[in-house]
Each structure stands twice: as structure tokens, then as C-alpha cells.
Amino acid sequence: MTAEVNDPLDMTSEEMATYEITRVLVDQFFCGEIRYTRLADAIAEAKRHPGSGQKRG
Image 1 (cartoon, rainbow, N blue to C red):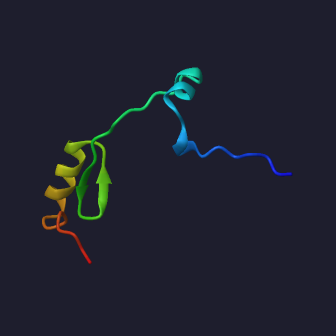
Image 2 (image 1 turned 120 degrees about the vertical axis):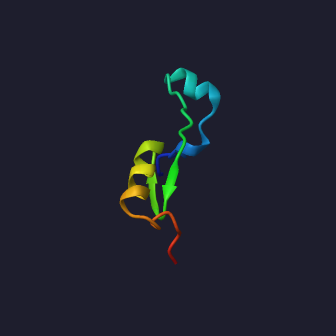
């Protein structure tokens, strides 16, 4: 017999409240393939490397 494993993406609001889990939505800024959580960092990267905001591929 195996132990049941709960999928963390399948948590209910009730379980979140029980375990005092909070969800925070975060803005993400992409400069090329690099992801930033601060717009100022993405802009600084773009200024250091003009054209880096273009996706490569």
C-alpha cells in the first residue's frame, strides 16, 4: 500500500486557510529570455545591452 500524495497545485481554499498559505501574484518582466521581477532591472539590462529585449530563437 502506498501513501497518498497530494498534488500541491490541487490545494483548496479551505486547505490554504487551514495552513495559513497565501497566494501572491507577481509581475514579471522579460528582457530577451531573462525574467525579472523588477521593471527597473529589466530596463537597466536593456540599456546595458541594446537589442537584448528581442527574443532569440
